[in-house]
Image (cartoon, rainbow, N blue to C red; front, side, top):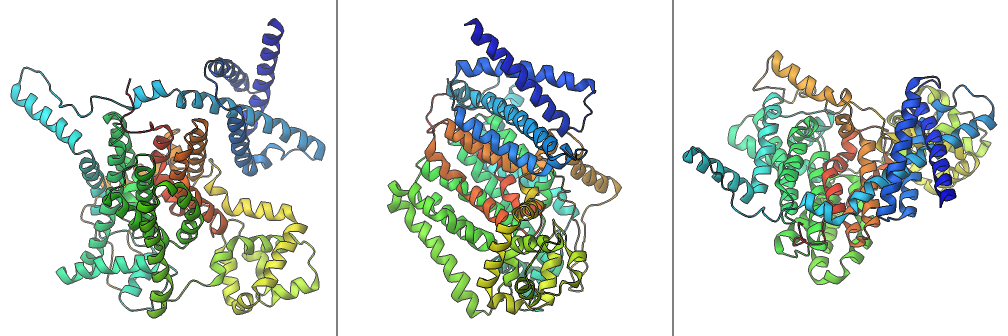
Length: 609
């Protein structure tokens, strides 16, 4: 027994040492910094504490280890050059990276076990999350009966109309942004859609055509009522705010059916109502905003239909409509829906009669709109180069690294682009420069010789895998690396246009402008709070929530993560920009959903104590 304890002590001493080394490198400390000793002590006692919890509550070591390896890989793929920048020997580099890798794996392994120990303690967790008194009327005995009666009635109204209160709370908190950014934030993408609505340019699906039609519908309603273009745009903006707030209300209603404590619901409402980027995005005329609302609605509908078993007409309708929106409001949404479809069919196989009809109806409606309807209205489709940004960037990286290419391979590329300025134009994190170079060249040749370029891409990848991996990391790191900074929600006003729409704020002044500026910048200044502004953290939360579901053996809940996971994979397969928050805004919208779903009880009648 003593020998076992001694070996365990030595193991923890060693693990604490390699973890301290990893933390030292990650925080850019020098080895002689006194804080390295503080790190060592904190890590050592943390590991000892977690080990005792592991003995009390057994959880899967394999899932924790696999997740720890994934998190470590995602972190080090971007950060590792800083750890070895002063080393020239390959042997020393390999040794240092190995030690740091082991240190991070140990850190994440014990941290995950610590979190899993709470997530798997169902009795304590349910006591913290649930309340059996939620539906009981609230009474307050005080010295002032009139105040007491009004206060009790107010609290009971909130409890009885939680979803409505969530909806109104979001709209109320977002209202100042609406008034300040009136009629809404419009970037060049938004202006392009407005030009299509006004008939200035032809219909295009580069920005989803269906979203343009919805924008146009509310624009024309507003213009018919007021005859004012600015007011007409504001009508759509207000509709978008209501749609986003409605998705939050549907989520809150879903959780209330599980008898989640009012305090937990209040914290979730605060996340949506008070975090500034939700307010800014709610008034920004982008397809990404209603798309994010659709993803949250679709995920909640899956939870209601699968876990809760609430197969009613309302939930099936939300399931179908939000599925159609996912297919048609973003190009990658269509591919993600197709990827998720077989898993959805399998997950709902026991409820096929109820769930399959709306699921196939969403698929059929999307097919009809995407092909015969768009063809009938002569809607221009995005060009081919839009869908192959990452392979294009990888081939460009090989060229810019001066790797050997045969004369046939060079000739094939030169049939499409002029290579004279490719090194000057190549940006490892931004594909638009090379896309424009292809468009300025002979894109028709690329489209006509797809098989030859596919073979070229495969051959170069087998020959130069390091260049391909580096190019891929540079092109996608913002969506999975948790320490990448991106200024979120900084857009404001209306981009320059002669269409007759301009920024017309209904409130303003130095105080309003400064308050908005501070609110947006706090995410880049305040620790912990700043993690809510990180796309990489959102990705890690999704992966962590999936691992919690596996640890708890709630395998039937995995279907709830399908929309987010498939959409994330679609972004990672074709993103043109390494850091664009709106591309994965759906992940941020669904953050509370992922965490709560992982630890929800089996049904709404689970015991609270």
